[in-house]
Amino acid sequence: MTMRASLERMPGDELLRLARVLKIPIVKRNIKRSWLVEEVMKELEKRNERKISPIRLVTPAISLDNVTKRFGKKVAVRKLNLKVNPGEIVGLVGPNGAGKTTTLRMLTGIIRANSGNIKVDGYDIRDKPIQAKERIGYIPEKPTCYPSLTAREYIMFTARIYSVPHETALIRMREFIELFHFDEFIDTYIGILSKGNLQRALLIGIFTREPPYILALDEPIYGLDPRGAWNLKKLLRQLRDDGSAILVSTHILEVAADLCDRFVIMNEGDVVGKGTIDELKALFPEAVSLEEIFLSLTGGIPK
Image (cartoon, rainbow, N blue to C red; front, side, top):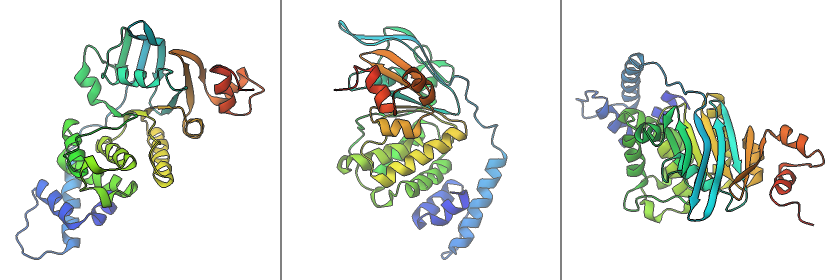
């Protein structure tokens, strides 16, 4: 959706809020909506002319080198090497308990690795955690949030954490409200949203920033209805093509096969296979699908 289209579809209160943020003088009691849209567009174009050069991600944008995580005597992730470059979607796939969620939690700084190095856009998550976390958008497998905030309040709060200019956040929030059909729930309290609608709120929050993105998404499709899942997959492919680096953790193989450029397959904390579908099929020429390759690598195809 273009910027003008986003403005034209904005409810009146959002458009007025945006005009106030941009400090557009409104002296008449009655104004035409078309006039206000034009004034907002003019001011946004001026600000865009003054913008600094667009962000460029380093290569690799996500880097995990020889990373190990233990919980007591149990090794959850063992000597993991994983890289995601700008312009690709990498699928981290494996059965429950394989170490996928632990990997994403280490990547985003929620838990610390016992050993190894983790970098986000060149920033070490241990030495420069604030800079690393500013560069990554994370959706957890079990989304939780502040229940006493409305979805709108949460999204704008997230934008402030990412230092997104207020006017940018308002425009991009409207764009993704439309994409995810979220208008009905934007002023609903987080605490009473369904899982799918909470997932939408969290997605809109991380997309208030401007791309390219570094994304770590844990089961992002789970909980979304077919339309929401379709829109998200289409969006992720577009973001990849525009230079974003995306790591998707899932055990739903249809999602992985439909979305990802290459795969890292984990089982009981170890990487047991990696590569594109064609590369993995070359290892298992009798396999007819990613599912059969996955089963072969994680315990064998059931009889």
